Length: 98
Image (cartoon, rainbow, N blue to C red):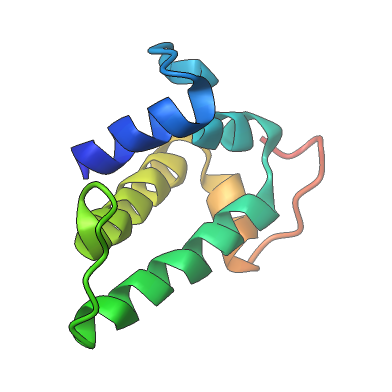
């Protein structure tokens, strides 16, 4: 999972070590529901590939990708429960909800 975070940092943030500027943190701050739903679908693809024996050569492999998603979502659930509920479709998120 750590390898996946590091690779994402290099890929999306030009190796910028500032945590709050990470690609996924920008999505948290923007409350970008679609970003998280897209990542959920992508994590499921990795899980299916892993169960089929299809290796992923990216850092952390398939399981690293799935764990990255779970870790990121756990952060959202704790830090912004309304965003988490909106991602799940339980809540219609508006700018006043925080």
